[in-house]
Length: 110
Image (cartoon, rainbow, N blue to C red; front, side, top):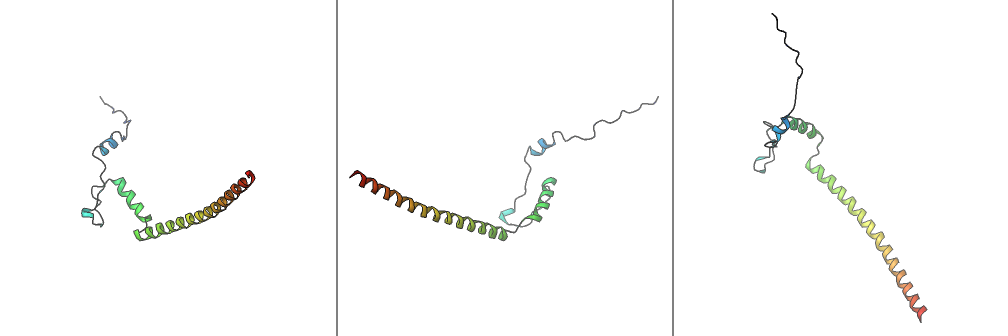
């Protein structure tokens, strides 16, 4: 007698793996004593490791980031000052108009 094994139906499942991974949190290594140096990738989740590798290529240095941030802030500050100046001129004109109309109303009452 020959017993034929049945065909395998399920090849792979990822069921419960996310739960198991997050039970104690997915750990991200932090620098020891605040020293910034290349941290060990050992024991780091593979997906995070790959993500870091590819994202590091597109990141700017801290100095470049600061320069860009400062430029953006200066531009925004100049824009705010310009808007304030236009508002101030309109406000003075409006106040003068209000004063003039109030005087005319006072004259009309007399």
